[in-house]
Length: 358
Ligand SMILES: Cc1cc2nc3c(=O)[nH]c(=O)nc-3n(C[C@H](O)[C@H](O)[C@H](O)COP(=O)(O)OP(=O)(O)OC[C@H]3O[C@@H](n4cnc5c(N)ncnc54)[C@H](O)[C@@H]3O)c2cc1C
Image 1 (cartoon, rainbow, N blue to C red):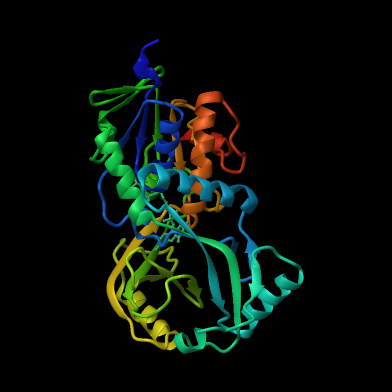
Image 2 (cartoon, rainbow, N blue to C red):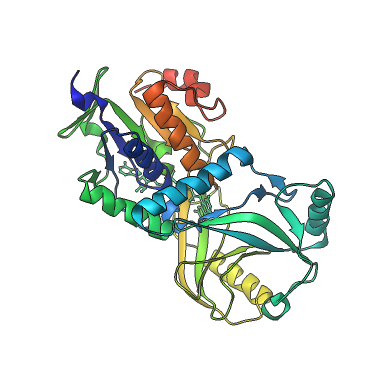
């Protein structure tokens, strides 16, 4: 068999493409990543937070006991390989924004929900924050250091001649039954990890994407301890650079472009002024479009007609925790035909993909 047939082309080097290429590398598969360098992708704008509980009703995230330990171990492994700190285990100091949220939290606590507790000793927080309804703690939570990991993996790919820094030009992609050709590359498989661009991808545009835009401010807050995440109606996450914090976010489904908005900046700064007792300075304002889906479940698997073209996408608001697990599943599926988790497998959309196949 032609060796090139075993090669995998991966389109995109956000969190999804990074982990897909990492697990291909670990499995000894030949691969190449094609990524258009863009500064405002969600993987570059995200805080990198992994919160084990979600929503107003403080429920555990989907598949928490499977996905969270897998993510933590995967970031440690990539981080060690690249000699960067991939992930930090921490806790979220959760200032209840109103009595209803406190009540929800206490109700879950009475049911002995995992990950949550009440902060008994308020420690230094009264001198840093304004709050009236008490403090909960969520633990363990994680901060993934995407600003360190993604460029380090990119540099490795470059060094290994496994990166094409350009947009994939669809007219040059020749998908034949036995092989894929793109420019001078011949491969057996191509997998799209193209984030929000997937909603316009000729192979996968009919999947039920529900893109939403999110924004964040980068703040300088001298003196605020960087050893926790802080949450009230927004989240403050310490960044790798001492004294700097990420603050966000919002969820906008109806948007005209991916630019930051003045209205977010004003309302976030207003909220921060009421919450923080210490001065802060906004040093940057970012926005990006999340590849979210109607069912809030990822898209993984292969096209029912073009069976050598696959996808790893739909990570929504939780790319940091979901991408490692589903990238690993997809590589095991590719190599050993191991079944994908049905809730993520795009086989569930087989009919619609068949009908609209290019
Ligand atoms: C403000 C904000 C805050 C967030 N915070 C968190 C958080 O704290 N924790 C968390 O888990 N998640 C968070 N998210 C969500 C998270 O960022 C996403 O789930 C995740 O980044 C999606 O990663 P991805 O690799 O699938 O897509 P992307 O990050 O969009 O990566 C896709 C890549 O493909 C490239 N590409 C696309 N089309 C092509 C093409 N045709 N040719 C070549 N290259 C192409 C793009 O340039 C990009 O590099 C946040 C998102 C936003 C917007």
